[in-house]
Amino acid sequence: MKNWFLLLATAAFLFSCEKTVTLDLKQSEEKLVIEAQVTDQPGKQYVKISKSVPFNGSGQTPRVSGAIVSMEDDQGNSYEFEESSSGLYLPLVDFKGEVDREYTLTVSLDGQVYTASDRMHYVPPFDSLGVRLDEAEMQDPEEDNRYYEVLVYIKEPPATTDYYLAKFYRDDKELNDNGEWVFVYDDFLLGEEIDALPFPYYYAEGEKATVEMYSLSRSSYKYYLDILSNIDGDGGMFSGQPANIRSNIEGGAIGHFLVTSIAISEKMVGI
Image (tube, rainbow, N blue to C red; front, side, top):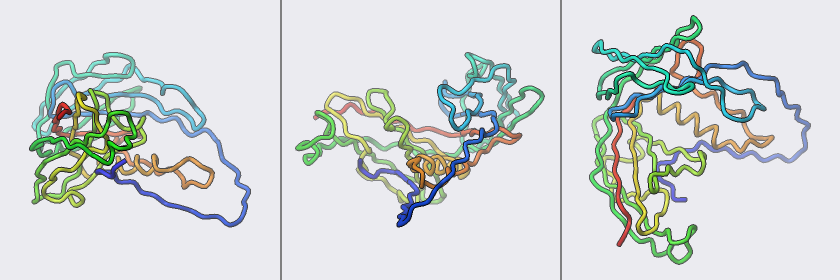
């Protein structure tokens, strides 16, 4: 896989002796998990509420119903949410966020109030997407008929320090290797102009390639870096302990409130 905007914290450990390790499998304390998002795109605002599962738990995390959910911006505009399905809360009236406004999430449940706040940052629009045949990949493709690179052209604002999350799709299906990859980066890595930078996946002729770019605050960037740190651990006996994922939810819950603007571009792959 080509090294696109991927940041992974890695460490390697060598052992020359044997050691008996006793694993502590005590049940961790159950936590409320809040995942929420407000964007500058219609139909993408939501709040998901669930409970964490123990270390040796399996299956879907328990969804939580009955919460009172709302968002408010720094201009005094308030938006009420209702439960659409178990644990999923959607706005009563659809709305879009705006760049440079701060948004506050409030969740009330069983007498406890949970809050989170963040500001929406600007994301530059795509100049264009291009397509290029990778002749080396064509000779020995990892996947049949997939040897076209999709190229990104975009100008990044030079005056500010910015952070981004990227998502890639093939025919509207997100590509992340079953959740094993997360693509985040800062503008120090990219510079002021992205010129013919390839997607991290190959495409076949006739497939639709889509990229979404999400603006991140610094706290959201750190949240995704923590996720990457945990993904990078192989789960083996000698792996480091999982990183504590930093949450911007206050009140005792874990999770994250993502406030983001989104740039989207797509292209049909062909000659």
